[in-house]
Amino acid sequence: MSSIRTIAIIGATGMLGRPVTHELINAGFSVRIIARNPVEARRLFPQADIVTGDLADVNSLVPALQGQDAVYLNLSVRQTERPTDFHTETDGIRNLLDAARQTGVKRIGYLSSLVMNYQGINDFYWWVFGIKHEAVQLLKSSGIPYSIFYPSTFMESLLHTQRQGRLIMLAGTSPVQLYYIAGQDYGRQVARAFQLAEDGQNQEYVIQGPEPVTQTEAARQLSQHYTKAKLFVMTTPHWVMKMAGQLSPLMSYGAHITEALNNYREQFTAEKTWQDLGKPTLTIKDFARQA
Image (cartoon, rainbow, N blue to C red; front, side):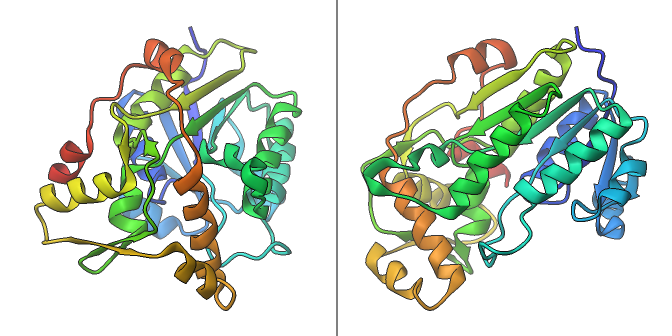
């Protein structure tokens, strides 16, 4: 069994970092949150150890990682980020690896992506997916044991990223089915992976939810079963977002990610994940009712 008892988390206050942090705490790990905004982190996780740290400053990471067996990274490329900016998933990971070697961290967990595998299909190339592929290679070549998770689309994205007021926004229609996963189920699987990880062992897990649905059906189910407000689904042609993306970095990000999601033919490959880490149970209907 794993010798990991203490886990530092970077990105705990984000949409997907929060459920993972809660599940790691529930699983009995001693959690330390490394945050640029410790006040917000303390508000969300009063029971956790909170320290200040920034992936852009390796000198802040060394004391933050002292005494930690593992670190879990919940990072992302901001929708307004530019190719020449500092990227947490490459530049930040390099700093993190430097600090991890200095402090003897035994394992690094990382939230990656499944849809990034659309890179190179149908002549599609997006620098954001390039960043994500590079991040995986940095971890694999680091010499530090890793646990990398490749999730399908999160249910939370429907309610937070795609929601504008009472509208759930879709760009184009697609027959492609996605295995939407709830953050809570994912958090439980991450906690189980750390519990099972043996010293020196590398882990890679595809993360997929219990049922495949199209994006349109997922949005409809969420709108029908969400209890806190009346929601509606609005679909605009993808070409409209693509044109708007020529003027707005935010729209450009949306156009690229929706193009990938609309065309990446996701196959179910999470058998080993379910066997090792447990089968996810939350459907989109369940998620909508408890959100």
